[in-house]
Amino acid sequence: MKPLRIGFIPLVDAAIAITAVECGFAEQEGLEIELVREVSWANIRDKLTSEIFDAAHMLAPLSIASSLGLGGQTRMPFAVPFGLNANGNCITLAASLYRTVQDITGQEIPDPVASAKAVRAIIQQRKRLGLPPLNFGVVFPFSIHAILIRYWLKLGGIDVNSDVQFLVVPPPFMVENLTSGAIDGYCVGEPWNSRAVESGAGSIVVFGSELNRFAPDKVLVLREPLVKDEGETVLKLLRAYKAAAGWCGDPANRTNLSQILSRSDYLNVSPKTILNSLSGVLPVNRTESRKDGDFLILDDHQVNCPDPRRACWLYTEVKQLLGQAPDAAEMRAAAAVFRPDLYTAAVGPRNYFGPDDPVQLKFGPSLNQSLDEYIAAAR
Image (cartoon, rainbow, N blue to C red; front, side, top):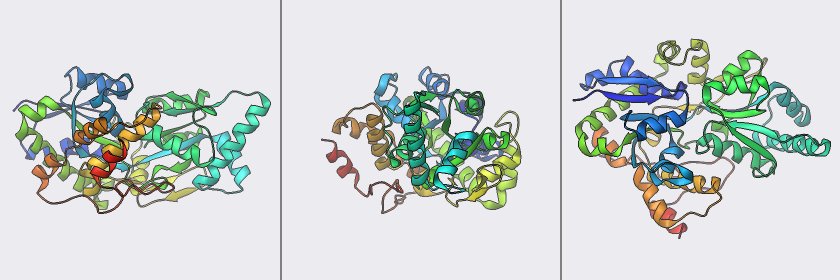
């Protein structure tokens, strides 16, 4: 069995990929894995496409866009047999902008709708003064971060196509760009929101988990040839990942997990910063902290099992980012990227899908539809 090269970005939601190696779950399955840290999602995509990587920790929307060749992506058939997490991301504003939001709302910790409306008021004031639009950083054009920050801004009545600008910034460079003033806010996974708070450069205005409950964030992506040619290897990898998910999801292991992830070859940040993310108790500014039990979900069959309905939702969102209408044939192809058959073959044969809305948007319409209904709606 050949060693597997798996790429990852230094984020807390790489926990399963990292602990599968560090805690011996891959070794128990007879697997040898080389983890390779990257700085950008473009690097992850390109090294998968060029067969330098066998698999990767990847943005869920990017797996769909790349598999279908959407938005200028090189078409590369990927398989997604495992969801690595839901949530774990935040929207962070520059400290001065956040204080203005507080002043407008009269709230120490503004709620999502109030904060978005306050940003709209700020945008209108800037227009009157002839100031340039606010710039928001996203980690990649096709990411849950690009989807969620637009979703939040729309809650305030902001036109995301004309009122603001979006810049692509790799996760490790978000704080630097916020500090320099190149961006006024961003949406990213942890620990790069907490690092902004710790440095004094920014404050967290919204948790991603306040906007949705189960939107897929990162996934395990495999090159399709690996699935076809190394089927038993794939099943072993999925068993190792599910064992790692169980370990990561156990509160008793949070301290050990934060120590592992904090290492210089992984996230290279304080264990305390990581522990906050794992526990869902985060300082959002210099004086206030908040808690959300759904802040980061690592171990849950509804998260780990790749539901094709979520792939359909992601496809629809990607098409919206591109300003295009969904197509039924493309949506069917998008659904086929998510492979619950591989997950159940590795973990055990049962229905792991929840009976309800697979995304659970907090301020949006219910998505409680069958797979066929999703596809039919795109005709």
